[in-house]
Length: 226
Image (cartoon, rainbow, N blue to C red):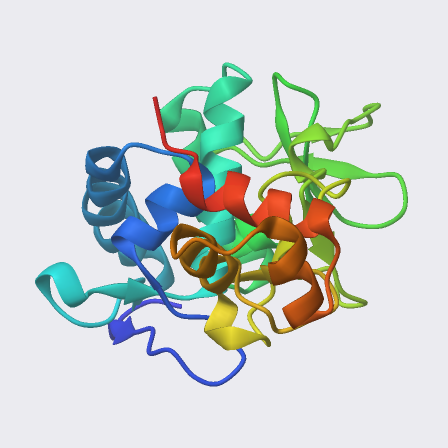
């Protein structure tokens, strides 16, 4: 992974997200997302992976679904009290171990709220920091409760409101924009029609969804970072 810096270019099935998209989906301040992208992903982490994580320039910069998930995991790890330095070390080490520029989009990465691990077998876990100490631990994957993984243990869907709500981010539907689960109906479309004066029940009938799903769409679109 290393010497030639390559750019991640969106392709069909990878999702396309502007920086404001990422901020809204993850409910993060826009300035923080910009800083993380420039300072961490396109800065320090790029030196390890040999990849820049955005495509385009200025306001037109976009990232893929895997980078979106990496941002989410980074944010949740910081919430657990793990330092930025340790998280970046974990990314660098696990990127080499797993041979991927997106180790945080893999369910091989686990945490017990104090230490980061990479799974290497059913029980043995390796500490994902610069010391590479082997440890056996009971681990929890609480920060993955909004992420769905495929058979290869790679993130395949993201549920921004949790899996008990109907809004899902699926890179294979509508270029990865928020849709109603099991459909290609955009949350933004339902919101726009509701702003035009249509009742929720009418919207639900028009799009063959439930009023509760319309409510989820309106809630998702209207929420904002504090």
